Amino acid sequence: MQTYDVIIAGGSYAGLSAAMALGRARRQVLIVDSGKPCNRQTPHSHNFLTQDGATPAAIAAAAKAQVLQYPSVRFQEGTITGATPTTESFTVTTAAGEQFAAKRLLFATGVKDEMPAIKGFAECWGISALHCPYCHGYEIKDTPTGILANGDGAFEYAKMIRNWTNQLTIFTNGPSTLTAEQLGKLQKHRIAVDEKEITEIKQAGGQISELLFKDGSTQALNALYHKPAFRQHCNVPEALGCELTPEGYLVVNEFQASTVTGVYAAGDATNPFRSVAISVAAGTLAGAMISRELIISEFE
View 1 (cartoon, helix red, strand yellow):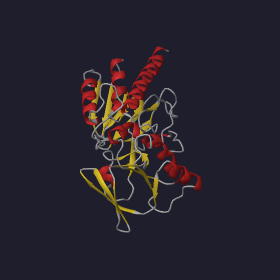
View 2 (cartoon, one colour):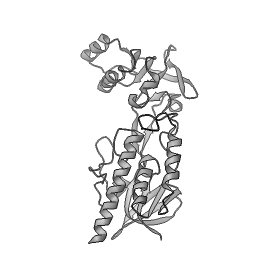
View 3 (cartoon, helix red, strand yellow):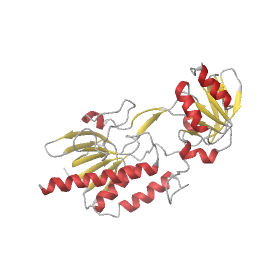
View 4 (tube, helix red, strand yellow):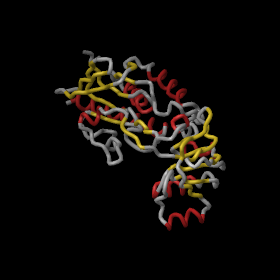
């Protein structure tokens, strides 16, 4: 069984960034990646200097090519399905039944969004059904925009989205749980609230044209913000004993170390700021800290 210094689960932005730091530190690294990033439908990435407007796939492809120039880094398609701690390392198993060993593990596996049960939503996710105005708000500014949410979450979302458009409607998809005070403030800022149940999102190529309601009525719309429920894309860290936050993110310290010794995590699996730039930064930090830990352990 081949042994590496570090095995990285997930070869997207955080994983590749960590691999570059480790490759430059002359560490033997194996990246195992399924090739299914959560933003694979997203047409453009923003807020990443030198790459603003590039496709996520193009950024990842360029990053992978640069990382694999370091001879100690290996990339393999696959999915890590298990990991077992041994005396001084971990034994990792893939879905194909392969086994590898590593002194340290880094999980950069992201999260899996759970789409609402509305016809057409999944096809629009990342294109015109969006989660972050900082990522996509500028491109749809001053256009008819919706928020699919209710209660306090809807109210907080509306305060933010109003910065990008004044053509804003909250769709509660059923009876509103907004308070009278919240409704008053929304009315003051001309933010409508629609309680009708949504049966379908009319779209073409992921671009929303209108919402269809249970009563047969429709409303034209250009974009819809929503924060879906999610779960960890990989359950191996939890099986190892890694702690999760109440929201479901992997707990890490300021150096990206999890609550299990020798196990690190970075990227969307650890925080709600789903940004390429933030993932890259976290991956670089994780790679550097793992290398430092290995250097210290080898010097004793």
